[in-house]
Image: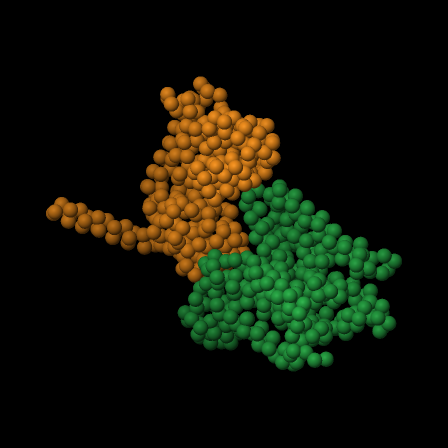
Length: 345
Length: 291
């Protein structure tokens, strides 16, 4: 098949882009560090023993603020884009995004419960208090997705259309519950809730990073193994069945990976829209619909795109910063429209 | 001439000794909290502020300082880029991981209570005075403040002996549209009660109200705090967006008054006693006319 870019050059290009984004994300920030200091501090962080006088500030900013933030951006961007591919493959519809199976609305509901009800569980043990929000968001996302999946199943078969509609219904239901919590919230919690819904990589710490990194690496290694099955599913469910693909198993895996990946990403960074929708599109546009290329390329593209969006979010208003969801939607929505209109000609 | 030269010498000498004394004290301040920034300024340290959050709107000159964003959504690197010696804020400041990062970078983070009561204010002023090396002035400010409030309370008591407390509602809105009514457990409720009014709303927090319910309560006085308009423009917008309001007593008798919405956040601020006095005068016009 003829594509705009050969897979090989696509991977080289995207890897370079990813490296560039990583470097910029480490080198740029509201605190301006001399390039040479950033380089030396980065080398020292990598464990290369070079003299470190006068590097305390650079090492601190790089090691404690920018590095965890960059890793968080890579993981969140990668796993969101990957989930987008999984959902678009499952629904065989390029307009699908991870929100369709209810993971986003479930996570939002979990977050609302944690933020508004958080004071009610005031007596939580010390080790769980700071993670309550992440935990509730993750469990909320997983729970609602499990429900949507369960509703779509009948006689051992998963009906994707029923699942889609169940997802829409449960999203509306979760939305009304979030609305109720919004009504009950006082001014301060209301703003926390609003900001959470816009996402942010701000305040990334290693403690929050590890669970997400593990999930991301797991999903990123698992899904590409199913690339051929996803390709077969593009032909239709019964066709894929005739080709010897375990379609039911595939659906289960796709839904599970999406719930896990998006749940973990949302728990770590709040809601970040449009990456899961736009990135797979972008890659398909460049390299065609073959999932063997689409899956790994989307990881790279999603990671790079999110890091660039985060750079804008933290630099444009410095010393304050924008929620990243504003940036991704601001860039993503016009691009999506462009794709739609372009397809008509 | 000679006298003035001596005076200048004396002043310079005093300033120098003051500076050397202040050598240990934090010189570059970042403040996340409206009332706190106001108190820092009231203590004569406005020039030490190098960044403030979006709730710091008074004095107006603070708006020209770099903004560190909303107090609950701070960015560690953004704040560090201002090279602060100290970050002060209320206990609403956050998120906690960012505060931990700032502390980790060696910048002390000082938290103050946002509670609207005199005990918290005393602690806040004492702490600020110590950090600014200006304890006597801070103590004086607190004594004056307390005195003003106590005096005001006595006035309210005297007035209430002769007049019934008016039923009041406080509306918080944007350009008049869809106002929220201040209920119990809000700074607004505290303010209304303190000024001698009786808050007719019985719910907790700020909640939207149907205009019909509002007309049913028929308050004698309406106080509005508008976040985007001020003065006559805000009053007009409020009545235009909510025509039913024109039928209630307060509007008929021209008793619709304005309150600065920034008074409602971040604990007791320095502008509060004056506003309380004004509110009381508006609640009891007869008593204000012949005291």
